[in-house]
Image (tube, rainbow, N blue to C red; front, side, top):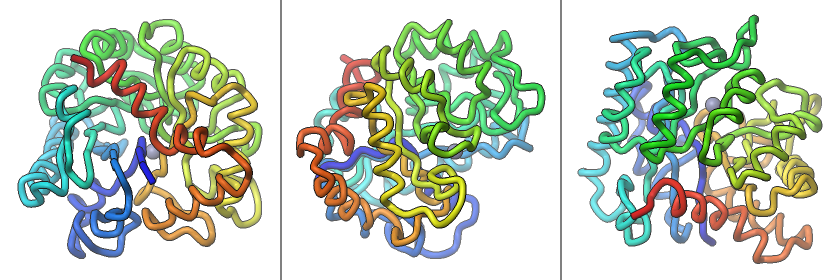
Length: 312
Ligand SMILES: [Zn+2]
């Protein structure tokens, strides 16, 4: 089974909280050992930026998590490779092909000129905000709910130019509108579910879902229990419920996975990367065609990244 996941916080957890045996093995949601059964595994690893870090402290934090991943890459040749160009995207034979992302534009410390440095580091996706306001715009839990700042607009344009995926997960609704107005390249919601099924503001309205899909962007289904249902215990069946809803809104070529491994509370019955195989079987049991399930589990994301991010 091929697997492409648009979001996990595992690198951040390993780098900052430490303990255990890191990325290779260990008891977190995701480890290379427990993901070995996956074929053609591409994993976006986010540098999660805590909202209280700004300026030089934010940069130091970003570099710490980035360096952790670099170190793992050199310690685990053949097992982990950070993708940087079209050749490695299509040619890497590593067990886990990593895409570096930043969750929180505070890593730019307010300076759109820093985009180039992040790009050179290998960052290919930026989630513009976390939940609070930052230099680029307001997150979804900010009281004012403002859109993008001037710096935020400059960053979206700069990301378009460089070929980096603009991610609206965590962004305020006004920010979403601004990205939709500015971005000339299809944008993505790396780890968000459907708000009409679960009212959490981190989820996307039906209008947003249609807009992302209609433009050729991506939406990664988030496994976080609190985003899957408003009350009661979430299960894997709720992930299918959100998938069904998005497919009905025209997401056949936009729907992907954005597990949020090591940044979420998993639904009852799921334990981590090893649960992806059972989820795949769940989709097939719901009478989705194998073609569609393969699109959701890897090919939609693969097509997008080949077309817009890792291009020659
Ligand atoms: Zn997140």
